[in-house]
Image 1: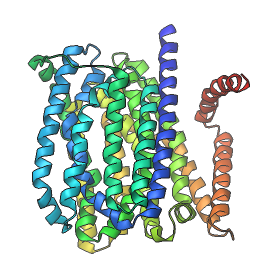
Image 2 (image 1 turned 135 degrees about the vertical axis):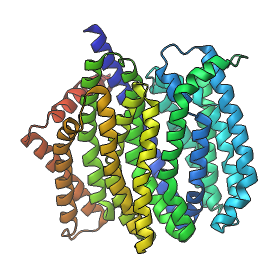
Image 3 (image 1 turned 180 degrees about the vertical axis):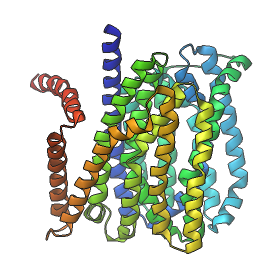
Image 4 (image 1 turned 120 degrees about the horizontal axis):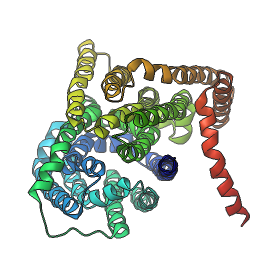
Length: 492
């Protein structure tokens, strides 16, 4: 019983700090993004979008699945950490050299001469990130997100200030480049300083083989997943204009403020917690079941609601020049509502040590988007249809993930769908009402947005209470002790 309470306390604390990190960090990132979107042209964001896939793939290669391997390994020691550090650093230097040399080829592929210098500067972040991998893994393993929240907040604020200052003085796309590089540099410096960890002068082949034996499958699956998550940047950047890609890039970034932030919050907290009970089958299943239902209850209405209020929200926040991003943003939000559920199911495979199955699933799931993208191009349906394939792919992939992860903990597809389907339907119903009401309100963007949000919140809570959704009570139970702790702090 004492162990159960300790695990619950650790999980709740981690979730609260991680969620606070999400709100604070993503809130700052969101504000900076708005300011830059008003100061810069869509084409500037499009140029950055063209090379995001190369940066993302590079960071995956540097990590090589070692972070997850270290977090999962309850016996990881100084030798293990030092070995991984030296490997990460060596790979990052090699990758930077490769990107430096291939920059002109990438520039020619997109027919954008500016990309050569942009890639050579931005790719420095790959080397910088190598220094933050071990400290971040250590903090995550300890479910210590308090330090990470502070680091991320400081890095977001400082890099944002630099970027806005550069944009105001006419640096254009370089404002975005330096922002990304400064963010990586500040995070790395603060994490290293906070952890005060130094590698030993040792490289263990045995440690490398043991950790890489688990991590290499995650590496390959991560590369596949990263490629397909960013394939739309490549296609739109190649087939259409930088301006068109700029609209898609900002729509993706804007939707990621909620989607990826919540996914990362849930995934990074639950992975070390669930790893700690990986051998307790019944307890693992019940804990996972509660996390899945609670995640759906919190995330589904947020993503559907944001999609429903997209028009007044984007026009108010970004301005008229970003009107074209509205349908892209709506579609990405609907697809993104399922991403945290994807992540949780894939977490189970890692917790159970099934990195082989993790890789197998990623290979299978590449078939769906490939076919969908081919059909869109064959029928010449345009960018909106291309983005719509993300929604279809997200739903199909969820069933695949649920099936295989469910087998590992005896949590079948039928059970998980039964747990999530009521919340899914309530969220969609709420979103449909909110979207429909928006078309009849005779107000400007701000009053319309506020009315829609208010109606959506009241409607979702009312329906949840009416149908006695258990997670509503769970959320209240989690919030009450937090509110009680805040009140004395304020009075004191």
